[in-house]
Image 1 (tube, rainbow, N blue to C red):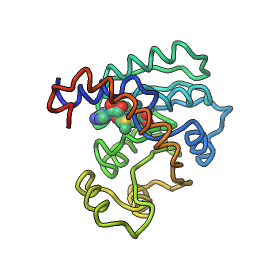
Image 2 (tube, helix red, strand yellow; image 1 turned 60 degrees about the vertical axis):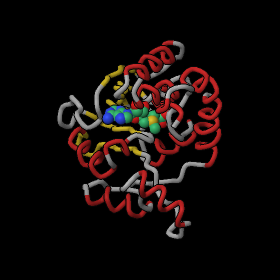
Image 3 (cartoon, protein in one colour; image 1 turned 135 degrees about the vertical axis):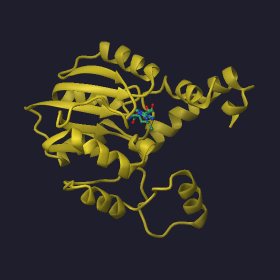
Length: 220
Ligand SMILES: C[S@@+](CC[C@H](N)C(=O)[O-])C[C@H]1O[C@@H](n2cnc3c(N)ncnc32)[C@H](O)[C@@H]1O
């Protein structure tokens, strides 16, 4: 198994593959002044197994295309959505977020939680813009520094992991340079990281190591 397949294995039974919560998705809907009575065409890019897709589909009307590179995540999303009552329709699409088979100005809303980093924030938000109708909404979350004063060890680690690490002000500048008007922003709560992402991930380590413990890539 390669590294990607192992990552999918480790994450696929968890509700989320990144930090977030229904409350934060709801707050983003509110800040973007998305009308809950209107019908929208929405793409959820890098949806994983669809925690935020499900919340969007229970909250908004219209059609949601849930996009992810990995079919296994989309299969889980389909299983999960079959068990729930949604308002919006959900369709899945296995595609890379940097090669989307969409029409120009096809969507009212592009949603992407914890995923754009895979192709780089600047690249992603610039590329996706053409798929938005005039006046359309992009809701995106991105790993960012919340302060200008950071311990060097953390700075070195994260700059090594993600060259585009920047402050929120830096990310807003990139959005504005790409032609977006920023309607609002907020920082995810600690619970979004710990209760909803890291702790469930830690809990799945035991079974993962039992299954793949003799695999050097899995051990790393
Ligand atoms: C950190 S997870 C976030 C998933 C989900 N939005 C959530 O918050 O639970 C990043 C997601 O991006 C997907 N991904 C990675 N590279 C991708 C690519 N090139 N195109 C589409 N999806 C990709 C991964 O499979 C994963 O589901």
